[in-house]
Image (cartoon, rainbow, N blue to C red; front, side):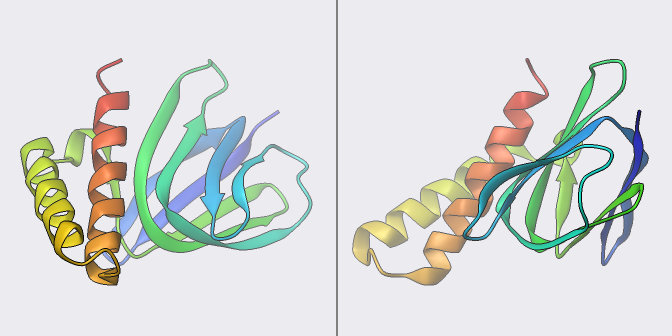
Length: 133
């Protein structure tokens, strides 16, 4: 049994397809997996990856930078400020962004902008790395 998954960002539909399971991370709730028949759900997404597990066992992993997830009937909808597939991530740029954020946090551990930049860089590197495995 499968359901429809759609990931939408301001740039357009980033992902659309069938899945057996979707795994995401919500703010304050940790990781959550959705399978067909899941009860209706709405949650706020953390800066993290979203895994779409296909019926054949394959998996697409996308970097998601905040947003919302909704499960309704046979559809999982993800609305995200920014979403990136592994193939779209500039790894060198993400590494530089991580170094800059770490340096800023070295100067001020409470710098929220640097904390958010580090989270985005980390998830980009994690998703890009998942594409090479």
